[in-house]
Amino acid sequence: MSLLARAADLDAADPLAAYRDRFLPAPSVVSYLDGNSLGRPLAATADLLDDFVRDQWGGRLIRGWTDGWLDWPLTLGDRLGAVALGAAPGQTVVADSTTVLLYKLARAAVDARPGRRKVILDTDNFPTDRYVLEGIAAERGLTLVWISTDPAAGVLADQLREVLDEDTALVLFSHVAYRSGWLADVPEINRIAHQAGALTLWDLCHSAGSVPIRLDEWGVDLAVGCSYKYLNGGPGAPAFAYLRHELQDSVRQPIQGWMGHRAAFEMGPGYEPAPGIRALLSGTPPILGMVPMHANLDLLAEAGIDAVRTKSLLLTGFILDFADERLAPLDVTVAGPRDPARRGGHVTLRRPGFEQLLAPLWDSGVIPDYRRPDGLRIGPAPLSTSFSELYQGLTTLHDLAEKHR
Ligand SMILES: *Cc1c(COP(=O)(O)O)cnc(C)c1O
Image (tube, rainbow, N blue to C red):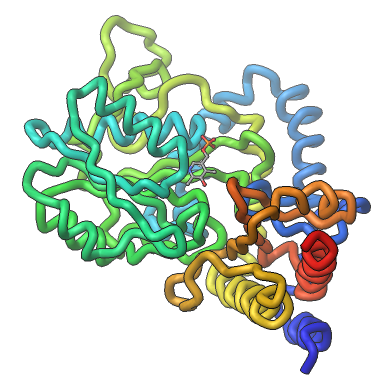
């Protein structure tokens, strides 16, 4: 069967096909393949934002805080935990940005393991993760131990075993590697780290809303992630943090603001952290940025993360088959895992000179993501992308790659 016919068959059999119509149309876009950088907005999000400005902000004004906004970081966190993270209530907050929450959690974690001087991370993690940990290491006199990962894969359990010891305070990795798309074996890595008494911090930016996550079951200690990729929260939407129940009394984050205080509105002298997960908050929560999350979590709850994952594997499988059949003859290689058990929601293709294709691709309405020096990431979000749309985008890429040989 041709790839074109297969795309049509897959669309006809897709139980999630109708969800695509819930997103706002983008008339200038033929094929959106960058759901892993910025998810598309739901039509319901435009209505929610409009209602929020007119009725809640405009109508309730300051009363909105006590009418519910003050609790949004926790209530939305619980909902996100239930729908996407496999986290029981009371362990997730929505706040800040991923970078800031990463700092708060990583600093808190190393301080909770006093005397241990090492933090283990990998060279292929997202820049912000690497930079934030460099800063913390300098502040706290710690040593960063770097695992060099195969660019086509991710961190392997054996690599961790080689460098882990009783001097390790914290281990930080991404659940899905932003470049290769490698899906880490979280429970296995947690088990190894815990045997040495180290804490684990997972970055879920590239997996939340795309891959099923079971934070409680997997024994994750701390996690952060963003809500603007597969969770469709919009540019600069707030991030989320998870802190396991058992650690909430012993792990203390460093940015002591009034919103994390035990009695914020008493405005008294001296900081005393609020009990539980609220202590992860610092300042006034970014309420406006949380509005879209209400619609997005309803959508994800309705579709179900398992169905999203099933379609995601079919989409990435289609990319791999297309690459093998039509792109390999043009010297395009797949730079990432093929095994479905180790594959996240995007596929990275490589060819020297891919950079020159980006402008003509955008001009043709095809929008993938470019990563230096020669990678194109194809990240089709399952709820907003059809197989035919993916086929069209890949075909345009093929034609341009042929032309710019
Ligand atoms: C997107 C992403 C981030 C982004 O952090 P921000 O603070 O939102 O800019 C961090 N880590 C990973 C792994 C990402 O994919």
